[in-house]
Image 1 (tube, rainbow, N blue to C red):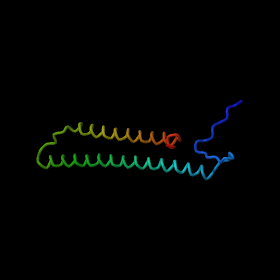
Image 2 (image 1 turned 45 degrees about the vertical axis):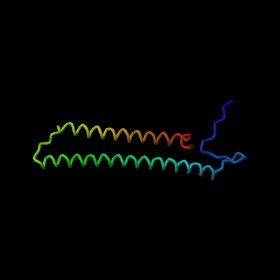
Image 3 (image 1 turned 90 degrees about the vertical axis):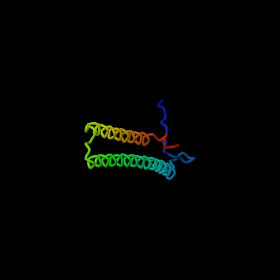
Image 4 (image 1 turned 90 degrees about the horizontal axis):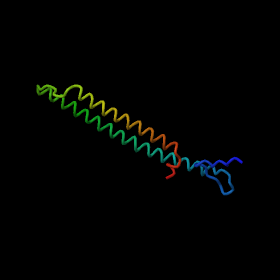
Length: 115
């Protein structure tokens, strides 16, 4: 005989065995709220990191402008600054991708959200 399937994790049932629609909706709503809080906190952290990178870039540009105003040559090689910037962008892209994968994993893993 075929094995009986487990009920969905989000489903709530009454003592008589019928689906408790209001209870099930509350459970789902609470899990969505938890996912939303998690996503908002990670987006804020990402925005802070992007702000840090932007401030760093502005500082570097200002330093380079001061060097040129003082009559000095730009002592950095053009390639090294570009490579550092490229490395920073690559790191940001990998972190954003990682964040997206984590959000997808959590969205598809009800056991993680029930904590």
